[in-house]
Length: 150
Image (cartoon, rainbow, N blue to C red; front, side, top):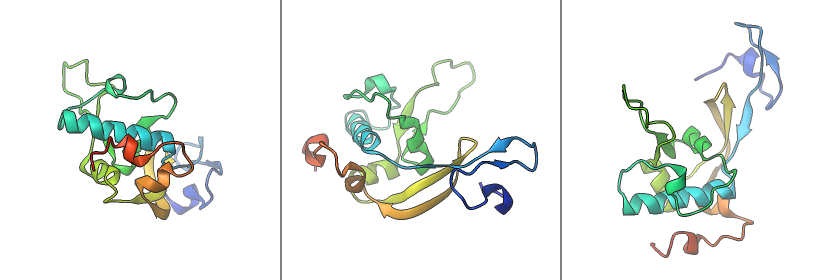
């Protein structure tokens, strides 16, 4: 999604008026924090035991309290289970993507910031970051989180 230059205004978090609907809107810079990185590793471990299976957060082996994991979809690290007609149990199911697996294994990086407008990723910026960068300054050991699977 590309936003008109006058709407994005180039300034993060600055509210502007939408030219189409006059609603006040803004873009939000998001990044992957250590809690999200830790949870993504838990998703990787779940996937190793259950390849390709969708999970709910309660299926993971950690307490994810407040990490807002669904934002990992903006970087295509996880994906939501597609809606299937007459299936009321699709909501809240996710799975890790190939990029998410590569990111967990330290084989891929993502841009530090994802700029979100109307709950949609519209721009990426900043330096490339690895899973190790996201876990910096945390009490978590990458090797312990990965369960020595490397």
